[in-house]
Structure formats: structure tokens, C-alpha cells
Amino acid sequence: MEKTMEKEEQTRYKMVRLGAVVGILGNVFLAVLKLIVGLLADSRALIADAIHSASDMIGSVAVLIGVRAAKIPPDRDHPYGHGKAETVTAIIVAVLLFIVGFEIGWSAIKDVREPVLVPKMTALYAVLFSIVMKEGMFRFKYRLGKKYKSEALLTDAWHHRSDVFSSFAALLGIGASLLGKEMNISWLLYGDLAAGIFVSILVMRMAWKLGGESIHNALDHVLHPEDTVEMREIASAVAGVVQIDEFLAREHGYYVIVDIKVAVDPLITVEEGHAIGKEVKEQLLKEPGVKDVFVHINPYNEGGRK
Image (cartoon, rainbow, N blue to C red; front, top):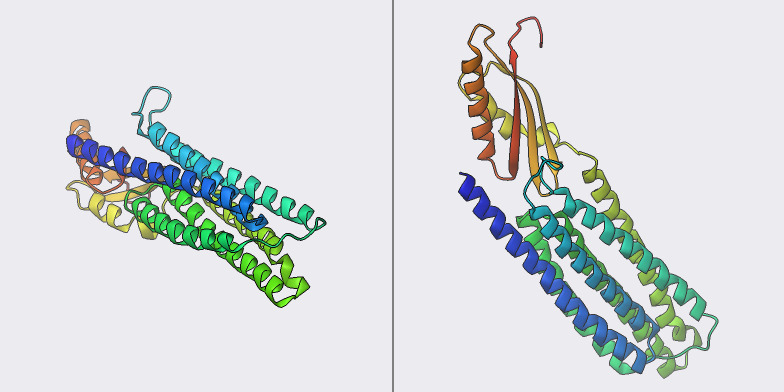
């Protein structure tokens, strides 16, 4: 059973690492492409979008570091393992995303005072290409994150999705500016800058949401009773278990650690009670995502718990 779990963890590590590497390479390519085209085509929205892609790259690097740290086996200082490394990484990514979003917005607001620059048509093509590529990266990493329960990978996947939205906003802004120039409508010329400000708000909102979820999970969040029904039934079905006095399943990154108090016949021997507890642990460890189980044996008291 231990070999099977080890093999599953190795597979998980390789696939999550693959997702992070794909994110890094894809974001490097897109950031460079959009920055060069944005500068040549005089598009503030595309340059802002390039910065967003660069922040995605930083986020993917952070995910890769977090995944490697989470893989480190338990030690004396970290007896529950290093699974929360991914949660910490997700928080770092969210903070970086918020900072970048603020910088994009502030830069766009300052540029409103400057002479309006209408972007060239090449900016439009670059944004369309970015939308297609980013959506593909999101779908790939989201599936991996869900399958292997990686908070950091899911956070980074939504990072890609936010880039899709920001690129779409840039598309509308650039299109509005080009249309304003073509039809000689002065207020449409500011579409490119308006898109930059909208992108910043979108990015900060996404960062706030993802950061809040990751912080919640970092604070020893326990699964709700409705999420542990099956595990409780498995423990209750073990021969010798009279009742379950307490059941806590704590999320520790991508895996769960179970703390359970089991009531047994008070007249059995210590050895028999130990055997029951061992069986409860072995059965629960067969459940997907359960990393470790701590069983406390209580003597059953008909009048209440002891």
C-alpha cells in the first residue's frame, strides 16, 4: 500500500511540475511577444497585458518551487509533511497578481494626461493570438489541478484565465481606438487606455478572491461533515468500533490528515483496542487524498463520551 501511495505521489509531482513548466514557457513567449508588439504598435493596453503575462511567469515559477517543497517527506520539524508549501505558494502568487494589477491601473491613469496614441493593427492580431493560447493553457492546468488537488496549480490556472479576460479587454480597447481613428470619433481614441484600467481592476479582483481562498485553507481548514460521510462510514464499519466520538479531516495542502476518536468496549484489553485503532487507520488510508490518520481510542460510555 505504501508503494502504491508513493507511486501516486511521484505521478502527481511529475504532472503538476509539467503544468508549471508549460506555464513558464508559455508565459515567457507571450510576455516577450506582447511587449515587442505593444511597443512597436504603440498600444498601452497590449504593454499592460504583456506585464500581466510576465506576472503569470513569476507565478508559474513560484508554483514549481512550491510543488518541489511539498514533495519533501515529513521530518522532525514537519511531522505532517510539507503539503502546505503549495498553499503558501498560492498566496504569494495572489499577492504578486494584486501588485501587478495595481501597477497596470496606475500607469494607465497617468497616461490619460499624455497625448493619445492610437495603436497599429498588429496589436489586434497579437491579442487574438494571446487569447487562444492563454485559454488553452488555462484548460490544461485547470484539469491537472483538479485531478491532482493542487491549490497552487489551480490558482495559477485561474491566473491564465484572468489573462484571457484582460486580453479580451485589450482587444476591445485596441479595436475602439482603431475605430475612433477610422471614423474620427475622439472619445473612442481613449479605448486603449480605458482597457488598461479595466484590466487592472479585473486582475486585482481575481487576486483578492484567490488569495482569500488560499489563506482560508492555510488556517487548518477542516472538511465539512457532508464531505466526510463516506470516511465516517468506513471507520464505523470496522469490527469493534462502537461509535465515533469525533472526526476531523484537516486539509494540509493537496492531502488530508484525519484525527478520529473511536469509542470501543471498555472491557477489552489494551492490545485489542490498539488492533481496532490500527484497522481503522489502515481502512481510512485507502481513501484517495488521505495522507495520515491519528486514532484515539476511548472507552465507550453509554451515558456520554469520555
